[in-house]
Every structure is written in structure tokens, then in C-alpha cells.
Length: 187
Image 1 (tube, one colour):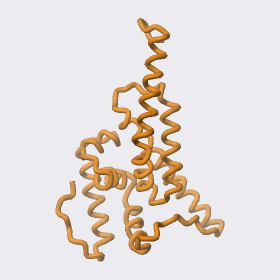
Image 2: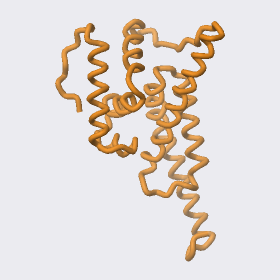
Image 3: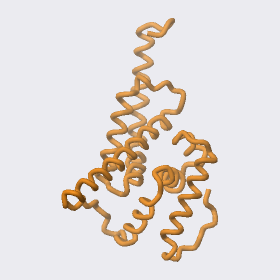
Image 4: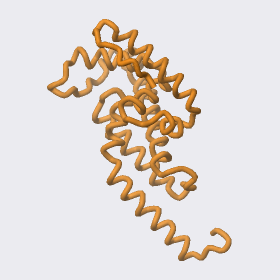
């Protein structure tokens, strides 16, 4: 117990934090799943699992949340780690499946999407380093500013800009034959 804080005050603080977390889950669940979907490569089931695991880990660690950062920043850092862990273990599972001669599980693709284009974009995104992919998704797909992204991933703004620049160069190189005009604004 903290000196000068009664047991009932501490319990009220915990209850308040739990209420805020429940409200956070209700308002951020869809965004968390969407971000996870983008980070794990378009696998809806995996995205649901990653988001759920992140919420569970955050709930279990809620008593250690020191409120030095915003709850959103703290949670999305957990989500980013969960997505990175999922991608790493998916790679291990795919290598083991290749060794065993089994085909990796297929992911569901919405009917209206052009499957060949989706595969090309997914392959181009997979060709990025994990850091480049994270910042690209956060800034260009989730709409975060460079400053918000830097705070979320725990990097300096200049580093985030560098990762963005390299990600855009890589994507342009991989997708150049699609003939899409350059928007000219990459950060």
C-alpha cells in the first residue's frame, strides 16, 4: 500500500482504472482488430486472436499501469508486441510445415477483393522489415501522425520518418509495375 493512501482509496483507484479499461475495450475493440489484421497480414481469425490476447495481457497488467502514458499508447504497444509475436511464430509454423510437407493454412479473403492484387500487396508488405511495416501501417493505414507513431513504438520521430521513407521506397519498388501515380507526400 502507498504511504498516506487508505485501503478504500486504493480500491477506489483500482475500480476507476478497471471501469476506464472496460470503456476503453468497448470503444477500441474494432480499431484493435483492424490494426492487428493489417499487422498480421490480413488473416481475420489471427487478428481476432491477437487483439483478444492483447486485451487479456493488458487486463492482467492493469495493476502495473503507472499512467505515465495514455492508456491507448500503453495498450497499442502491447498489441504491436502481440502482432510481432504472432508473425514470428507463424513464420516458425510455416517453416515446420514446409519441412513436414504440409501446406500452410489458407487465410480467408473477402469475395469483392482482387485476390492477385491482394497477394501482391501482402507480399510487398511482407518484404518490409518489421519496423518498417509497423510504422507504415500506423501512419498510412491507421492515420496516426509521425509523432503519435513515434510515441507508440517508442522511437524518435526521425527514426520513424526514416522507416517510413524506406518502407515507401520498398513498396514503390515492389509495386512499380501497377502504374499507380506517386502521390508525392511520403511523411
